Length: 155
Image (cartoon, rainbow, N blue to C red; front, side, top):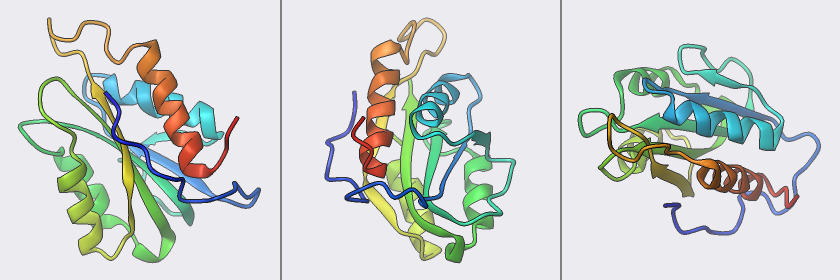
């Protein structure tokens, strides 16, 4: 289940565009999306315990719903972000039952003065017996397509 798609943040992908990917994943579901995004945009996917030290035109930030909200690791990562180093954040997430973490994550980012793209990617994630095999191949292809749209790469 992907969110409504809007026009890309960048009309054309520039060769000088810098892209970073950070995520938190306790069950491996969000990691699968991060890896698909990384392959699509040619940037490494790193856990949020690795701070963003370089400038990023686009930061793909992946989270999951834990206890009805974003994890403490995501909250700490956002608290440590330098707004001057991030052009915009593109959110992606997984959850077994609840909607995405977009509302909470975007509020925290905006409080720091960081632009958040309205376009997000969210899909179901496997949790115990629920949503077996999710995210699946179709979800991973959709996550990669989302990343390419955000960066303006139409391959």
